Length: 354
Image 1 (spheres, rainbow, N blue to C red):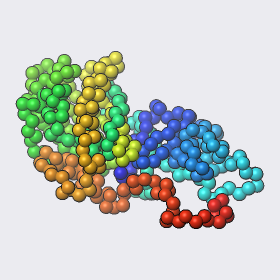
Image 2: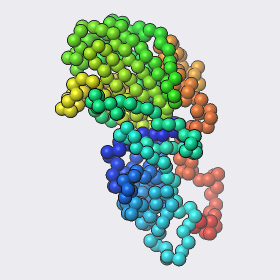
Image 3: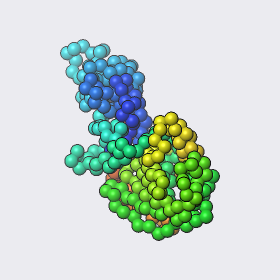
Image 4: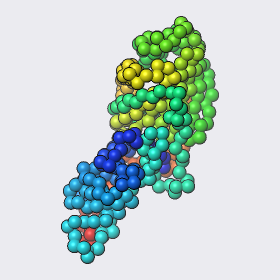
């Protein structure tokens, strides 16, 4: 997992004045809106006794702990401890970690890392979210494996006629060969375009939207660090753009928030039909992804065999490894979950209350 990036952590429409917990990067965060409607993000753990702040309530733009009522401001500083007398000094450690947020493309983005604001990578451009000619549908899909395997599956060009032979991949069965392609720098991401020659009418839903028995199908596969993929497919009849935010809950759980844009059949009453079809496709993928071992992609490029059609995945591994080598990796578990330096002796009372 990587730090120093913006993470699309939740849909803006679901974040309200009621605190809600999100689990990401092996940690817990709490999101809520303050009195100005701005999204606040804090570590979802009271420093007093570790209670989840998300079980508390919002008061004057601050959040109250559900256990002892400690009140925390949007910057994480504790502003009130009900059990203390008014003249009691505030403990120096009475604060929780806060995180920068912004809203864009219908998502709340949380910056996780320690880079100064001017040095932070930008949120990637997602122009389809502002295109009124495209209809969108949403779907969440949970995969029980590391997010790197799920992300790689989304940009895997050669698996379609094998894994999806009973759905849209049937259109590739007569010509599964992948032509050589070039990878292109997208700025904090990389893309590749592949043309499937004589793509035949797929089985199922899309049969009704292909007028010709076969045609060339151009697909552009893109990934943006840390966890976003985009697959855009075009033929003479249709355009489909499939975005996925692969949400790293923990080392063995990924929630893929899928947003499907389509240029045809732009009726809301058809959304369930499309999402049911894509649920079958994602189930085909997850069956394989969950079987892969090790769960996380290897850090050594030589640990697995690569062929020319894996060029985009290989580019992802190299770019990811670059930032891991720079120290941008996230620890497997929160460092404060273990005793500091293995010490078992108690500090003085004065140190504990400060």
